[in-house]
Amino acid sequence: MMKKYINTFRYALKIPFNKQHVAALEKGILEEQKSPKRTDIINHLLSKFNRNTTYLEIGVRNPDANFNHIKAHKKYSVDPGLEFAENPVDFPLTSDAFFDQLSDGKVLDKAIKFDVVFIDGLHLAEQVDRDITNALEYIQDDGFIVLHDCNPPTSWHAREDYSDHLSPARGQWSGSTWKALMKYRTVSDLQSCCIDTDWGVGVISKTQKVGNSIETTNPFYEYTVLEKNRKELLNLISFEELKQRIED
Image (tube, rainbow, N blue to C red):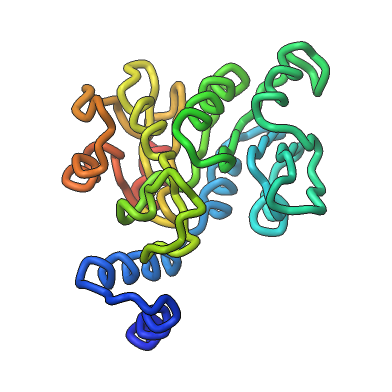
């Protein structure tokens, strides 16, 4: 089945494939097949709190993809609506605008604290970095920040230009989100890890023991360094390992 898919893709693009291209295409297909998905991980984290929970999602696109399936007592959604015309979200804003208005008390109560903030907006390190910084201001001390697309399987998936589809990654795009997670992996008073599923689901917490910080070993955020040391740099673990760490 996979061979047929690759041959079809190759014919459609009319380009010669080398072994690297084939391997990259296969990795993308395999990544799509991994489970559990981000929704399952988020719902598990929310289920650990013995209280009414509050959830924030940044970068919703179609709410049926994730937001509508999240089990929280209160949940809020933020998206400027660039990719989904209907954009049925609570706050049709960029994340920067949302947090600016939140700090001024123009949206919600500026004293609000979220149990889980899920970041899946613009997949560029600079933006994700700002989203994490802002989320840290509004997360419960025992809460979680969850990031999507933190473990790009190839450099093509990690490209910064989403519109470049003439590669084995096609429309699949993790962007440079992994760089933002890497930055916070080196912050000594934060815990962090990356679940090896669904393109890499990053988890950051102030107090939950999901994974100790590390020394800076990739200061220029080179993808080749990530590829050689993926498990250590991302603290790449399974969902079962995450559950065990939270239980402990």
